[in-house]
Image 1: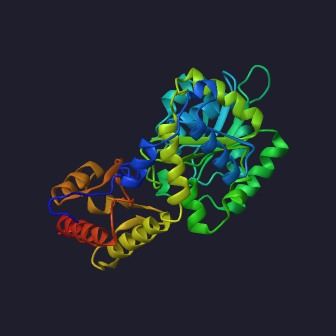
Image 2: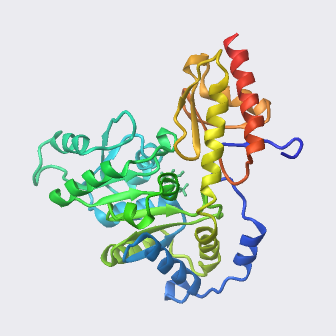
Image 3: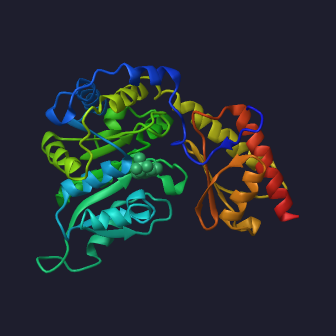
Amino acid sequence: MKENKFIDLRSDTLTLPTQDMREVIYTAKVGDQAYDEDETTIELEEYCANYFGKEAALFTCSGTMSDQVAIRSWTHSGDEVIIDKSYHINYFQAGPSTDLGNILLNTCDTKDGILTVEHIEKAIQSRKRGNLFGNPKLISLENTINGFGGSIFPIEKLKEVFSYSKDKGIPVHMDGERFLNACIATGIPVKEYASYSDSISTSFSKGLGAPFGSIIMGNKKFIEKARRYRRWYGGSLHQSGFMASAALYAIKNNVQRLQVDHDNAKLLESLLKKETNISLNLYPAETNMVMIDTNNLNVTSEEFVRLCKEKGVLVYPWAPYIVRAVTNMNVTAEDIKVAASKILGICIELIN
Ligand SMILES: Cc1ncc(COP(=O)(O)O)c(C=O)c1O
């Protein structure tokens, strides 16, 4: 760590492009994407469709745009989307989902963000159905689950939901902005894991280190619809190859490095747990996040974040008593050791 530099664990979106990535952006072959003439964007979309085992792919500006375009493409005004209340599409995107999507979010309250067939069935049964009523037209899942500390949606549960969704004729959208973290952590091949959803998004600007961009994948018919709504939402960029080149670089070079972030999150978790005098309530670090429950410390997350900042560590107040730390490309194992000792120092002061 350089002197006076903060150790920034607020998010994995804060990473800056490396020199290699900047050069790729600078020299990218571009054309006008609105005329289907941007070769780099086309190459990225083909690469990702093949990588995830889907028929087609569409590059978007952000994860939010991928989710909103997916919702719009699967539903009509007044339809219901079944979702866990912790998911990004509800927790952060309730405004766009209801305003742009014109849908009703039928939220389930699970203990861990893992939406099961039972939860979905209960949500469907929670009201009368028919012409007078809203009807469920999309099941939206998340993997990894941000609101539960980057936890993994288990493939067995996913298979059950997917098979149930086929019986019901309701498509499944996977908000997979950190889906590749789940693949790296479990060792499940990307194509296999992705086969249990009808559409899936992935971010290039989180652990993969690109400055922007996300992609949605699905069958050709879905992607054609999505292309229309991407344009409606202002996401049809012209020389998008500059952005696509960074994304292509990220997915070709940075997927395996997610393991480093996972190792660092485990290191942080184990160092925070090592102090036997304080029992810190942590969510298990399954991928690149550690979440600290500040209830035991009798302090709000905002106050805890302020104390950490005073000591040179930046973390994020996720909920009133939950603080999130995300490992990312900018932090090393050495930084994690320093951060852990500072955080523990604060905890000891708080409980004494
Ligand atoms: C699960 C999930 N979906 C969607 C988003 C939104 O992505 P963006 O910030 O690129 O709009 C995020 C952001 O962290 C996320 O964690």
